[in-house]
Length: 322
Image (cartoon, rainbow, N blue to C red):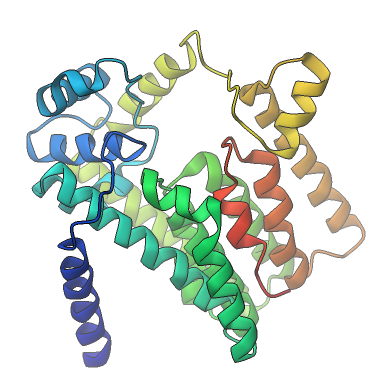
């Protein structure tokens, strides 16, 4: 325990020192929304109060965001609470710290997935990850996919070692970005039920306890969060631009574009869910829902649901050990 605490403190200090390096990381990118939300937490602004969040963004950045379509915060409360430290920093400093947090999560995921690989193979994959345009883009724009990547890596790690604790931790990390992590989360949970050996039961119990803890803590801090969250999602869904994305790419989105002539992420999501359900039923019926099937399935599931031009998740999940 002492070593773990010491290592954690060293990690925090290391990230802080790295964030002091004056890298030219832009702020008005995907990171903009996360920064404004965390500043808002310290100023008493509700997480799902879009109008107040946008007004705060205008106060902080002024005319620099005049032509920016300010995004909605569509994540659960515990994501914002776990990154609340960013709101104590200046925009530039916070962007640099988030850059290094993402860097750590990415290479931590690669390290976990590649533990049984040879040294040469690991060096190659670390290098390929470092020079990947997808990863570089993720780091520069301050994307929020990395917790899901770490969650998938931990589930792979735990499934190989029959660790109920780390399996549950991995699944909980997937909840931080629901529209990306939902399907891997459900698939990982279904596998526990399908196997139903002692350690699988313990892992499922840990997941349930963890989820109840996260939801309960969110209610203590923000009692009306569920209603506000649903109202915000409804407003987001009613936007004229909802579902349209001219720069998106994934298996289901490309299929919808070929079929309808336009890439509609909303329809593609339902297609991805349908294909996932068919995949699960087939694996269940053919008794192929094994550990390796669960590990391998994360990649096509991500491909079906990814709504971004750069497949941030696909690149890293594709390197996993099967």
